[in-house]
Image (cartoon, rainbow over all chains, first blue to last red; front, side):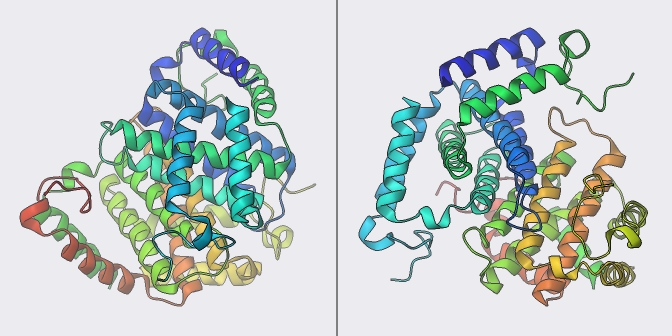
Length: 107
Length: 107
Length: 107
Length: 107
């Protein structure tokens, strides 16, 4: 289903002639902007409206897919690589059940 | 391949007992934080290092997948719905080739 | 004391020949990046380290002062103007004690 | 003039009974959200509308002042301290005229 979504996003951007705006830099800005709108759903409380949160998350996700295109990479592949890197930085025996960042953990 | 990635992310978080930290609110914060790190690749110039950009994009994407899980939704489905909404707000004949926001366009 | 701070920031940037990087756009990116680092102090909990939070807040504030310079405006003046605008949008009798955004309030 | 602004912000928040929402965590979220709105002025181009940029910068600045209050610190003092720290990390002879981050500079 992700393939179908990516296909439709590409078609839409082509039909709109919007690819000219989608440099990696502009997409990085766009992801930050949409991440801010997603965060706004939780600004004053951890209570939130499901519909609003889903819509803002969809925007972040869509721009992320477009950025992978702009960078010429497969987003699932780079995420798998990063997951392996994260596993190496956070060995289970030291970080299980704690949220401390790997470089902040007391020795 | 996205299914495989999501499966591995879930397994890792379960093994680490990290799901307790992954409330929608905390994930919204995490997406903003990682979006900032992605933006840092472009802070002073549109030039960037491909490897750094990919790694930060992977973080944004991974947290987005985790947030869809926390919200109990299918991320491709909500993105398809949002794409339809965007198409309705941006009719091709008015917005083709321009980057103006729908509510900022001169009449 | 703010005047003294602004003077020292300007002198430092001049001595470093860094003003060339400080376009409004680059400073807007920088403020988002530092805002993300400030938010990281609260990523997994509302508990935080005072020293870390102060340092990241200082970065946001410093870039905000630099951006006012780049825009050629007095930051206190634009903030006073915005405060008046906010007061007009949020009449006390309707918004006292509630955190709802002005355009989301039920009639 | 900053003193006068801070005084008026405090009075407004008191009159509105909004201080209850202004925890350091909520203000950190608010700064990120407003930073995203400021960045939106530059989303697709380095061209921007002065008035919009000033208004969003004012929001970032106002929340930064409120966060200093919430942390119980003097914002100019913490910024002066951070400036000294930055000067120590970026010696003029090595970083003059270059935008490389201190921990990314080639030896």
